[in-house]
Image 1 (cartoon, rainbow, N blue to C red):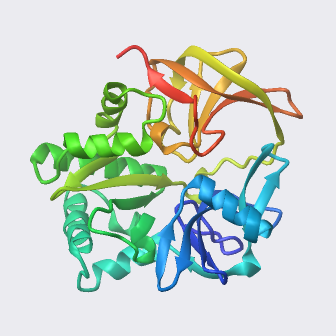
Image 2: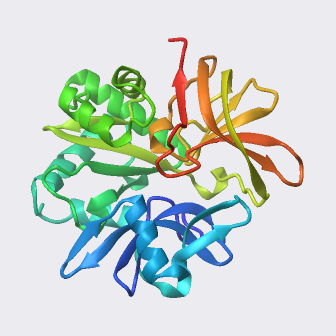
Amino acid sequence: MRNADFPYLPKDFIQTKQGLVFAVVSYQPHDGKVGCFLRYVSIGDAWKKIDTEQANQLLRQSYPEYLYQSTQFDAMFHAVAVKNIVEHHRPEARLQYVLQHEPRDNIEHRLQQLIPILVRHGANCDFLGLTGSMLINQQRSTSDIDLVVFGREDFQKTRQALKSAVHSGELHDLDLTLMKDNFQRRAGELSFDEFSWHEYRKYNKASIDGTKFDIGMVCLSSEIQQDDEQYQKQGMRTITTKVVDDLRAFDFPAVYLVDDTLTSEVLSFTHTYVGQAKKGELIEVSGAVECNIATGKCRLIVGSTREADGEYIKVITK
């Protein structure tokens, strides 16, 4: 599942000696560094979660060595040299630890109830992991449960298990309160009705005893498409187009092949638009055009910034 030479995968967390915890966002090294984004800062005995602006400001002022300008993607993100990592938090190890010990709070108790339900409906626990705040034991009573599924095939099995368990009544669709909370954190450019319509049909999130959980996919090494080409940003573009292939719709980044001459590939680095559209659907997409310097081939990026202001994917034929 992990490459011995570079064992870092998206959804992992890495910790530095300065008390910084970064979420890994890239499968490949960047000049020997781990592509990531700062999420938590150590303050006393606790970890404080910070947003994008706070993270960038802190690194600019105090830790510029963790800012990385990628010539490959013509973008700035965070990256940590392997030598500066003092702890590597792995989702699969954390999940097994929580399942094998007495729950310390209600969230861990619900997780211990959730996993057997998913397994009964067809999920394979050997390919599951735990990320988000629970990965570093920083969950609160209002926290979500963020599960990782390793591999495209097992991810789809887990989605079907979730769907089956919702239909059986063992798990529940998000109620209005949970959906509105999800909307406020992730909606971006969509209205609540648009957002919730897309979300309810994905079957990558549900609730257990009032706690929201979701499942995210991490590719196996055999499923990763190596991309060492260099890209240059060409400005913004909005198109209406048809999805012709959705095989990688739940990948990170999500990939949709579309019927558009200029930008035949749409990539989303924003979780909101993962699994957003299906093959055969007509969609409206707004994003940043990136052009391959060597080939001249262009693609459309949704999530060219973490907040993805003005960028979206939405189905316009339901």
